[in-house]
Length: 207
Image 1: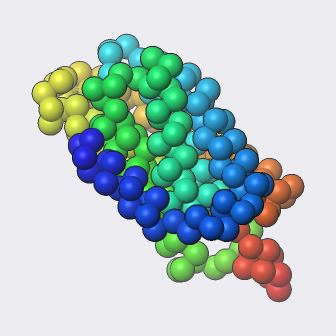
Image 2: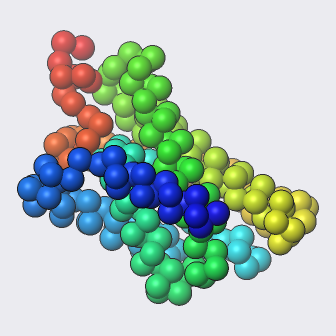
């Protein structure tokens, strides 16, 4: 999985338009600041079995702030940092990168694109559908994908994963949705220019 994960990271870096980003100090500070902000959030882990720890993601906010390409790059940096700090193991880096970062972030951004394309473009749709409900579905996708991998790789039985990992998912949905929904609301109100996926002309003007 490490090769596939790194290939996707390289694809994101290759397709990203670096020239305006390198010329804009604010964009650089915002990107690295978002990556650093995820580190303490991901350090707050809880779990009974080793490898089945849960934590909040914050990836929906990151995807809406930075877009898919820079979101993948900065969340990869966040994962590198918490792995260096010893909160994740290096042998699991490829799995964590693919199933814990790239898959949920990609799902979150795809869901935003679907809401932008097919739903009425209104501020409340952006906050509650692309933000709040999106975040809940994103952590569900991450948890289910990781559960499937743990069973497929014979690290734990299905019953163990169900009892010690999947059973916690209902308790994570609302807090994850609320965390991202509140963050997106604050950013849209006070710093809309920080949100790569938000424009007043799309969601506010003439509504």
